[in-house]
Length: 298
Figure (cartoon, one colour):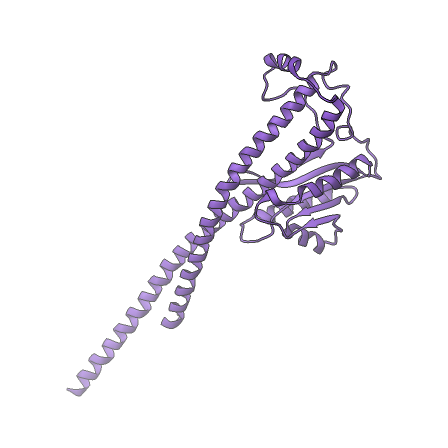
């Protein structure tokens, strides 16, 4: 059994660790609340843009069948054209299974591809992992600010739109972690190019859509409106996925630090009991020695 000094040292070390994990839990909880609000607002903005596109499609006599744009048109299957994968991950650890689950989903996707896709990475952890596996990255963004609003989404957007229009890639898929709650974060794949167009808007009911469509005026032209609207929808989608990823990271870290704090409390309790027993045993032994010495003097 460890001595009193060793037990006391371990006890103090666990208490110091507990302070750190508890502080990290509180910080992650505060950041999570802010990002959750941003996720909701970003979703509302995305829905508004998609509803505007739905109204635009509804003005077409063919209900979208005659709608043509380079970002909408699907590419015919061609083995010479790769897919492009955008991976949104974390840049720091101590987030439970957040990064590990994302990397497992990434492994499954890469193993299923007949040809190595082009890869753009947002986050240091997935970038380091892919380099260890020998994958060449088209681009990586690893030194990211805390706020996803400041992430280089416009730079990524310009790159993928140019390659898609030039037909050097077949489709663009985003791998990110979808945030449902702090206890429910799951890796998810979403195709962002070619954009899918649905003539049935969500925010406008079917009874009122025709009325709104009649009131919709397009200036300067339908094509120019699409040229502005579709890249904005694409940018909003990718940024929304980044907000989900950041919320998932904060939620996972908060949950992991909460579990670590509880484990530290349990370990502190057990170490304190052991320390008290060893200390009491030492005191009892010393008392017996004193009593034995007193008896010998008599």
